[in-house]
Structures are given as structure tokens and as C-alpha cells.
Length: 124
Image (cartoon, rainbow, N blue to C red; front, side, top):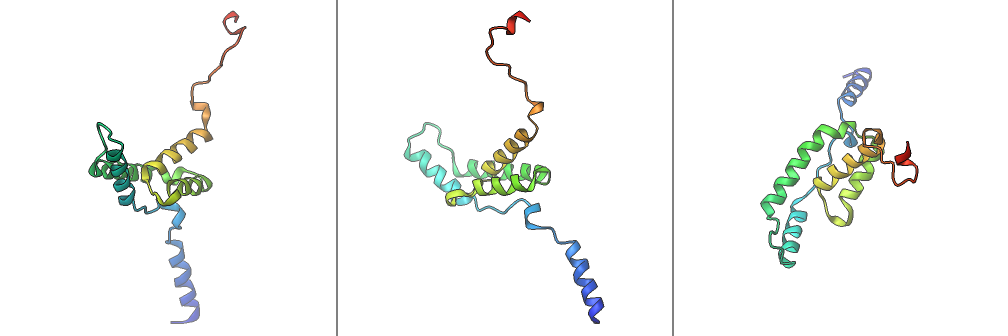
């Protein structure tokens, strides 16, 4: 293969490689679910979350992330990934919540505008 053909092949191959940041990160949530289950039991909660329920929640959050990840800004994705993997805990639920909050903060105009307390509000 000639050098030009090899260069063209490598360049073409790079066009199809998706940057890691454009994909939902792969998290290891099993340890988080095991820890959550253990903490819930240790606290004596009346309705502790089971490992299976925790894993189901994480899988659902991962599926939702796949639909919104590409719309989130790079800095939001990076920041949220850092938060969702802090202290060795990894959670798609935390990552999804952060991404949703970042999206809301970016466009708060869709939220109900709060006027707060005012002496003159009712006189208008």
C-alpha cells in the first residue's frame, strides 16, 4: 500500500471514530448498588432499596442518558461525569440528574418566573 493510500485510509478511519466525550461514559454501578443496599439495611430503613431495584434504576438512567447526552454541552458532560464518579462511587442516576439540571440552568426561561415577596406586587 502506498504512503498516500495509507494516509487516506487513516484519515478516513478518523472520520468515523466517535470521541469518547460524545458517548455516555461506561460506569461500574454494581459497587454503588451494593453499597447503597448495605447502607439502607444498616440504617434499618423500613423499605430498603434492593440491589435489583438499584440496578434497574441505573439501567433506566443509562438509557435516558443516551437520548440527552449529545445535546449537553461538553463542559456540562465533563463536570457531571466528575460528580457522578466522585469518591469512587459511580451512578448513571447521578449523572442523568446533573445533566438535566445543567440543561435547566442553561435555559431557565422555561421555568415559572418567581416574583418573590413585594409590598407593591398586589397593587398592580
